[in-house]
Image: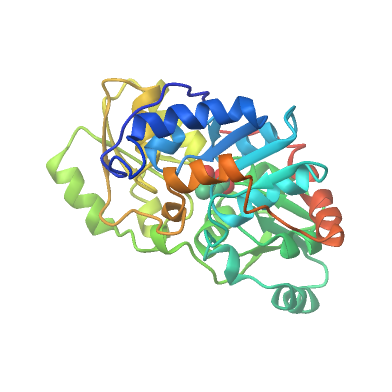
Length: 323
Ligand code: CIZ
């Protein structure tokens, strides 16, 4: 996880009506102080948003950071379940998301009734909810896990059987890492990673033979099989930073390469075609400015869901990243 304080421009979000990108970023910095806000952003956010965030990282890094917030207000740039996790960890604080329609389609693929039905079929199994799930599903799970600690979380469970929801590719990856367990896998997927193919990787490898392949475990198994390293976005970032190699093919959302370039100046990154999450991109720097000024829209969760999800999310935080 990096702290990035330098405003920077990006081609993605051209200078806005009502001010240049730089002036918007400067105003966002002022509003942090005026409105006592901590600004958090996921690695998939637009570069101009990552550049002004106080904390940027993968989901687990953002959760750990969410346990140490001093400010009364958090503005979270990410998809809905990420902002909800910040609320779950800070029920007494105000958490805002610049676009409350920035949902995660993968998280929406698993519902409480379906997971309960799976549990009826496999009563001995522990329910493990991947972070990319709704707060309601987290509330009925035994434990939550993120890509950065999933193997450690699942290995620690006394149960031999695990129900894993909602990402099928990640579930299959976990099954391979945990041959001693039986993983019952929900059939969900992240459409950005699901659309990646070995042929796309091979085409990039043919053009850049020195490049190393680094992918996220939400990729399909045949894409994972092409990779030298598999891990969370935070793990991928550290891997490329610490690697002696200079060029990398990245199997994840394209904006991750912004943080990689900041952490690894001089290294070169190639992304796969159409590696863009449209719902992360619902959050723009202008919507962020509005939220910083108006302190809206606010994340709302029932006490029941907060308490249920808090239990399983806090259990996840007993496991530091293992990458
Ligand atoms: O940032 C990541 O790696 C994502 C998308 C999920 C996770 O488990 O942290």
